[in-house]
Image (tube, rainbow, N blue to C red; front, side, top):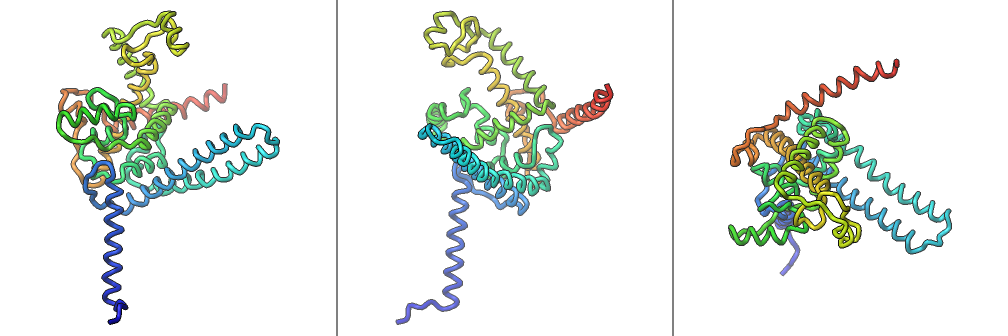
Length: 330
């Protein structure tokens, strides 16, 4: 009996193989959330794929830099010419990342989501592509809160979603609703802090917002008795980590008020930005858009609109253009 497959059987086998690959890709796509993914638009795929390639190159670039530092530590007696050659090699490999970044900027700049958000000072098409690559599919997040948790910018049971708190959050979820805690992407979290820095350095609306939030949380902590003033003994016990006369948070393991308020304000900035991105992507995809959790369930009324942010940043940009020629004449 012949075991050779005929033409029809080959077609069926190829189809089955293709389906297996597609299923495996779907499993990888919904890795942490465990939800079924709905097909996305072709333009979404192009941007997400470009962003994913850049994310991979970022890791490789960081790894190559760390390897070079390790070599220089292991072999301190290397000749200066050799050290310069290694640095040159590392720079040549890094140029691949810069090229990929430029191409990603070009691809993502045409996407409707970037067009909707580009009025925000400090954001780039490249950053939008990276965020989209981490999210993978807007259908996965039916609320902005889920996206905030997935990005590590939210709290669960008053605990920030970080590696240090994952076990506590997991236990809390299991005890209260019997569900495992899933949906935290550490790479996404790290990228969000980079995006926050870009927004703050741009000195636009988000910088003003950050300063206001930081001042409010510091005042609340001081008035609520959540801080203490470190003594000379505290400074000695912490081996210089704490500084005498400075305010520190109670029960926060030597965390200063300044560091605590900075992190809280940056997370608030991130959640606000992510809500803008989430809402705009949902509108583009034809999906319903919900209000933030604080508005829907906590009775907050201070809803910030994207149009207000873009208008504020546009006004600041115009002022800079008008003032600059006068400064040059002076």
